[in-house]
Structures are given as C-alpha cells and as structure tokens.
Image 1 (cartoon, rainbow, N blue to C red):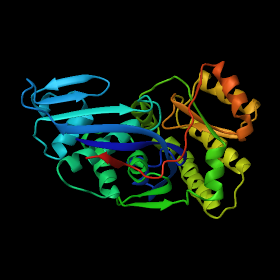
Image 2 (tube, helix red, strand yellow; image 1 turned 60 degrees about the vertical axis):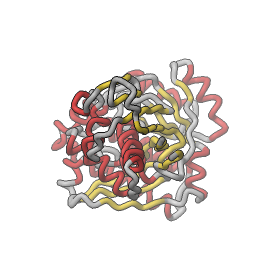
Image 3 (cartoon, rainbow, N blue to C red; image 1 turned 45 degrees about the vertical axis):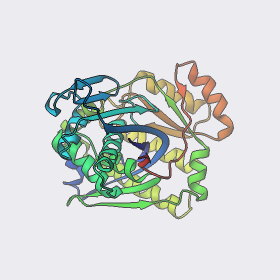
Image 4 (cartoon, helix red, strand yellow; image 1 turned 135 degrees about the vertical axis):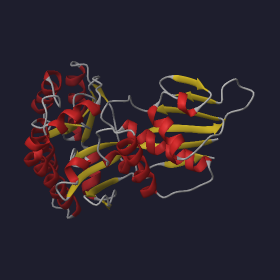
Length: 329
C-alpha cells in the first residue's frame, strides 16, 4: 500500500501570470507562493480479484467500475491512462481542507496521485517531473484553464519564486525558510475560511475572455511577485511592507474580473483592516475560499472574534518544508 502526502498552498503575489496564455505572450509569468502544513493524502494499492469490480475509488464520491473508461473522476481517469496502469486498483483520498477553496486542491491531488502511482509502479521520479506531468494532465489533457503554480508548489514545498517561461521551462528560487523574514510572515499571518466555495476554472475562464484588457494589470502583478521576493531575499523588509504589498496586489487583482470578490468578502476584509490588519488577499482565483490577513500576532484573538461574527472560521497554517512525499510503502 502506497500513501502520499502532498501540501496545499497559499499564494502571496503573481497569481494569474502562471496561465499559459499570459506567460507565452509576455515572455514569462512569476508567482511567489508557499506550501502549507495542510495536506491531501492519497492511498493506492492493488484491489483484490475477489471483488466484483476491478477499480474502486473513494474520494468525495465512491466509484466501483470495471474499466478506466467508466471512471467519472477526470483526474484519476487521466492519471491512470497517462501511466498506462491497467491493474485492478484501489485509490482513496482524504484532505485537510475543502476542495474548490483556493488552496490548489485539484492540482495538489494530481501531484499526490502521480507520486503514489509512480511508486506503485516501482518508479521514483523527481519533483520537477511530478509537477510537469501534473500540469500537462490538467492543462493540456483535461483542458482546464488554470495556471501551473499549484503543481510546482505541491511538488517542491516550502516558499519559492516560480518563473514560467514562454518556452515552457520553469525555474524555482527558494527562500530560506529559517530566515527572519519568512518566520515573521508565518508568525503574523492569519488565515480564515469564508465558507464560500467556487469553481476556479469558471473564474479563470472569464478572466481569459478579458485577457487583452487585463495585460497591464497582470504585468503589475508579475512585477510585484519579483519585488516581494527580492525584498524578502535581501532582508529589506518589514511586516508593514508585507501587508501593504498584499493589499496593493489584492486591489489590482480585483480589477481582473468582477467575480474575484463579492460583498461578503469585501465587508470581511474591510472589517479586518479596521481591527488592525495591515493587508491581505484571497488565496487562489478568488470568489471565496480562504482569506489571508497580515496582522501583528497579538491581534489574532481580536480578528477571530470579529470575523467569527461574519461566520468566517480561523484556519491556522504553518510552512510546509517537504513538498509531496511518500509516507508509506
């Protein structure tokens, strides 16, 4: 029995510039993101021939089928085809956070499933290969209008600047997770679940339809990611700087689509700022999911009390340092 453990992620800057239609036409895209200590676990094992079905799947739904062609879950179906696995097989998954909530869950699941399936076949592949394969499956094979950052964050773990070039090469620049600045970020970062789930593909598809109008703002977002990385890397950084960076990026991002925010999110965000938050942003494409707020750690209880009245739930996160791993063979 193979079990993989793969981290979800939060993004700080550069989101939406990792979409192929942007980086292929503007030389490169750039995202600063961090893997967090919330995971998706995938179990893969042989399925006994005594059962009536050849394939059993347990995720948010249960499937019992006799051929890959009958599988309804698109990622599982595509991964089994991609790796040419025709065995009787059992696959199950559990997650530390809801799907469709802005933490990159579908891409994290794809990376974790590939990692488990490669090991099931007796193969060990590097992190770059896992990210490349997962991105290919979701973007090229399944035709999802998403970016690549989630696949790389899940595969590599930690906090990194990812650059996505027009020739499809990707570079990974890590920050020292033990540095003063990275520690300061996670000591003063407060994440809340809005309770609103959304389909990232629909939001990104709408953004895509306005890509000509959005280029200037996307270039600003890309530049922000590089600037923030340099500030963190060179230690020229304060918590106030970080909060202001996220706030500026969030205001720019909202201009990409009227579906990125809504009244509930805006009211919660404005309330948090009134209570002392220095800035923040939603994770992922927007529309709901998780909101990340920067505020001095002494304000945590006040934020929890204030935002709980708006039915937002506190979701403590820390930095993951490992990326996708196999925890059982």
